[in-house]
Structures are given as C-alpha cells and as structure tokens.
Length: 303
Ligand SMILES: [Fe+2]
Image 1 (cartoon, rainbow, N blue to C red):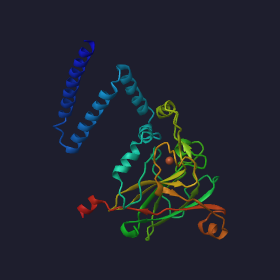
Image 2: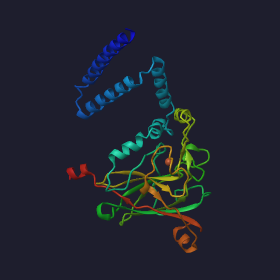
Image 3: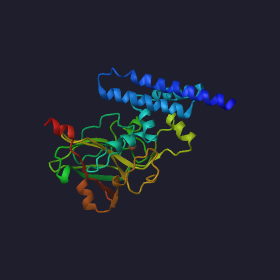
C-alpha cells in the first residue's frame, strides 16, 4: 500500500515537473533572437533534467549556489576562476572540439591567464625579460589551405616562466608582459621569438576550483606549454598550445587540453653558430610549430 502511494506521488510529481519545464521553456518564446531562445530553452531543459536526476535537497542546492557565488567572487582583473572551472570540467575542451576543423591545426583551451594584452614585439625579440631560464627559440609558419603562407598573420603568445608562474601571478617578481608577445608574421607567414622553456605548473588551487580538485583527489598540474592565438583576416582565429614533448603530465593534464598534434619537440641545440644567429647562448632548445588556419566561412559569404 505504502509503495503504491509513493509510486502515485512520484507520477504526480513527474507531471508537475514536466509541466513546469515546458512552462519555463515556453516563457522564452518572445525572444527576438532565435539563437537566444534556443540557448535559454536548452539551458532550462538540461538544468531541469539534472535536478530530476540528482534530486538535490534544499541544503545541497544552497551549497551549489554558494559554490558558484564563490567562483564569481574569486574573479578579478588578473584571475578568472570561471574559466578555470570550465577548464577542469572539460567544458572548455569540449567547446574547442565542437568548433574544430580537421583541415586546420587543432585548437585547445584559452586558459585563465590571457587577461592582459601582450606587448607588441618584433620578430626575433625575446618575450623573456628575466633571463634566468633555459634559452629557447620558437619558430614557425602560419599557413592556409594547401600550405599557402598567410603573410602578416598576428601571432599572440604567452607562457609561464621556468618555475611555472605567469607574470600576473608574481607582480612583485616578474615585470608586466613577461612571457608574452604579439608578433606579426612576415611575407612568408613565418614567425620566430626567443623565450625560456616553460615549466609544467599547478593551476591555482587556493580558490573554489582547488576545493573541487581536492574533494575528488585530482592533481592540479598542467604539462609545460606555450599558448598561441593566430589570427588573420578571412580566417578563423585559432587558439591553441605548443606542449613541450618531454614534460610530465602530458597524459593527465588537469584541464584535458592535450592533443597529439600539439606536442612539439623542444630539441636541445649545442651549436654556437646557430645560437649566435638567434641571439641566444648555446646550448639552447628549439621548437618549430607550423599553424594551419581554416578560411572563415562567414568572411567568404561577406566577400
Ligand atoms: Fe597556461
């Protein structure tokens, strides 16, 4: 008898919940922009489905609200905890995946440290303003379909230092713009810059995202990498990384961003002549990374 009553209650509850979901979804029917309506309806349908599946208590829902509030409160001009949360949940990588194009270089997450503009630098300049790490030269070429060069493409790079810290994390130790540079590729689409070999590093764990990682016994490390955004008129902007091939954590990146085509050999070069040509001391490490951009369909339509 009791189970029959419980079953009937559940059926009644399901009907009420379903009607509620439909009512909320329908409330967006007046949105002028069809995409806005589609997004809002989908968010509501999926969020309601999550509640029906998990059946959170009032206390648990309050904890969820407090957690997201803490994530927002941890953000400031130099820290983006929401990007970090999206990263550790694999959502940033998934967004990259659904926007990827097999004809171009694989994209990967933007990460939380691209919050300041990179200083404009000339090809061959050093993005390292401290001079204590292992010297490194990065070269590459920006191309389009068929390997044709993309002259004048912009190449924005940023990385941590040899200890695993970005400039914005150590404003007292690193000058602003250290490890960052905005370059313009030459007529053959080539770019080059000097730097130091970046270290693997832990993502910030002193905030709500750190609590999430500790609660699930996950480590916080990312393999060593250089971030890169390549852009040119008529092409889709590419946000990606070069991963250092001999770095730890390539197989367990805390933000799920490693893709095979992005792992690059940072080869040791012990040749004084080559070192002199690049303006570094031997031995140094050298990485070469070509970027293939994909034409922007929207730009084609507008032409
Ligand atoms: Fe990074």
